[in-house]
Image (cartoon, rainbow over all chains, first blue to last red; front, side, top):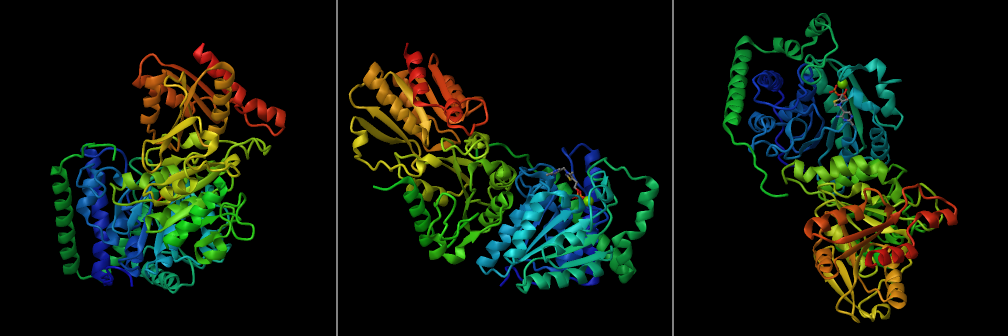
Length: 306
Length: 333
Ligand SMILES: Cc1ncc(C[n+]2csc(CCOP(=O)(O)OP(=O)(O)O)c2C)c(N)n1
Ligand SMILES: [Mg+2]
């Protein structure tokens, strides 16, 4: 009974397209900061594309999503268009939320994001409760990073989710850093153990292969949708870009070593040259169109207190 | 005749009966206990599926309520003691209060958090506070407090029907107080007019024995009782006549009823149980003076100290009727 229930395209080409769309969007965005057309900050998803593409290939389009500060990849993989996101990032009235939210605070259909670490998890748990009570058939996916494992509200929420058997999937994207803090300095014990303590089953993968992510996500989603309660999906991955714009303590050599995990490079050999070129052309055109169109849009005005 | 407690309890029963989207959640709310202050009594027996007993997890309770509200339910969450609102601050300020505006009016967040506040029961520094001032002036968050002049049940039902998140502040000493239904004898020398918003009205209590009251006493919640006793004493012993303006809505500020009274009295005395500095009264005073030059003003509030356990100390720290009388005398002198 999930809304707009057409299955997502999850063939090799579609997965590649999703990942390339995210990659090119984020690269274009980072470049645009250099031109002064954007203000504030942004958290690029570059390097983590397999997570979003794989997870959303496993979820239903009508499922509810709560994302975080690093939300562009999730939004694009969820099915959101690049144009209203570009407009939002430029602070245009045509943006996803009219320029009020910006990079970390977007909302579209059943997709939400907020830039407060950890605090989104109880909200997602409450959404899961609502979906179950309303028998919508939807599950809720909430995305957090390794650093967010430090927030107490998370553990309160896991307790609730397990007690109440909520249809909640917690996706942990461990990109091994929280801003500049490596995971070794911030996470004691194991990540899986945190969920296991509440009796929440864990699917854990150390991979940037979108097919492996998708396979694990498919199992985790099936568990949650089956009504057995919450699940967690821990994805160990890498971010290639800085945390936001310029805060990266890693050496160029370390970053270079990570390139062999590039999810696009891992997946690309499954496509023909012609397919890759075709996808590249489509994506480039879509992103050009999105940014050019957004650039011409008007800025919002404050009309009243509302 | 009904107590505030009975009216609030009735409101929850009524709301759950009328609307399947209403859920109640909080700590120790199951029957037969029915909540620390019994406001939720009977609900779990009547609506077992929609009364959700929770672990001791205030942040998650509030966050879960916000998520439920975003997705079409109407949660009413109880924080066992209002002092614990510090633990839900992030959920109210950075989540519930933000969503509607930040998402460009695409969503609504109809949630109510009920919080029993206030002292005078000897509960000591962490179970006696009136912390609502920390949540006043947060855009997107409405703060409401019942009093005995309006029907507390109507007020709570209005909060549940509200599309915005509401922090509903219940002073613990109000629970056993009688709701002064219209025509109640205690008020026979006063006329009461309902003013301001329909949803969360303010009440102007005017003496019928004079057309020129000397000062305006502004208060909310249980402090109406202090203001009322002070007004009686001032009338009887000093021939100082007070008009009372009793607010139900604390934030956002809706000052029209107060300004109307001040244009008659030109003197404002605010009474609150929160600590004096940077409080509700301070903002009321500032706004009143911005609107009307030349007012004389005073504030009565708790001293800027934690609230002590010992009765003698608690009495010295919290505002008393005598302090209201003294301030009124100064103001009219
Ligand atoms: C409550 C809170 N504390 C701190 C921050 C500032 N902050 C933004 S992102 C970030 C790092 C988050 O790390 P992680 O959870 O690993 O996610 P990642 O950025 O790696 O995707 C920090 C500290 C915040 N947004 N919210
Ligand atoms: Mg991280």
